[in-house]
Length: 269
Ligand SMILES: NC(=O)c1ccc[n+]([C@@H]2O[C@H](COP(=O)([O-])OP(=O)(O)OC[C@H]3O[C@@H](n4cnc5c(N)ncnc54)[C@H](OP(=O)(O)O)[C@@H]3O)[C@@H](O)[C@H]2O)c1
Image 1 (cartoon, rainbow, N blue to C red):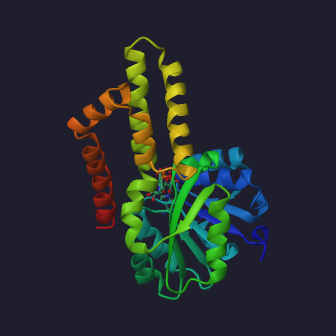
Image 2: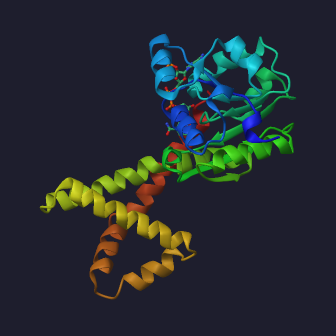
Image 3: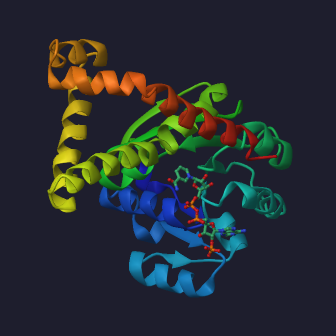
């Protein structure tokens, strides 16, 4: 089945889901006429209708009309939503959830084991077509469903299917990762500003440095080999790397990732 033959219902249309919708729209994946959405706040729903030119709907109508149900509520709102969904006929629906920390077994427990659920962890870079998304599927998921998820998320960056047990670690690396990288970028730009550059000029150069380093790695170079090339003995890079080693910066960065992964593990509790 071609992608534009499916109907999609977006349940929850906050920050992340609107980015995903915009990315799908940019890729012309599905006509607006085949999309419906719902959120709780009627004022924001009206504003979103005008901005994105898609129709809002009641949950019952959205479920009836849509083959794909895209769940974009927060983790603590998921249980209530699933209990509502269970009261409708959801047989044959493809459910895609982007909620952090909620295992597939939680969906199966409430909705039944036969339901097809994809647990996907995207990140904010989907909005510029540079997202990294990871997915895990419930046991009853068909190859058609896997292909749908692949087609949706590959239009906004890379997508990779993983074993579900990795999802908490990947929630930290992939979902929260941009937040950590952006904090580092902000720190580098502020250093430039402290030394007399304007913040915007400094940030622009910082962004190009991060992007260039990332591209080198994407081309297949290993960070340790590149570092070896850049850090000539007694040079400037070596001086900075020594300071990073002495301050245990890399270990502290790993602690931040660990904290995010641990939070993901406890979100459903
Ligand atoms: N932010 C990220 O970078 C990121 C990355 C990966 C994954 N995620 C996941 O994405 C999900 C959404 O995060 P977010 O940052 O986009 O949160 P958000 O902006 O608060 O969006 C949540 C949306 O869910 C709606 N909602 C809540 N309960 C509902 C219900 N019962 N029926 C219909 N709509 C309902 C809210 O509607 P109202 O606002 O109208 O009340 C809102 O539109 C989370 O589960 C998060 O773990 C986020």
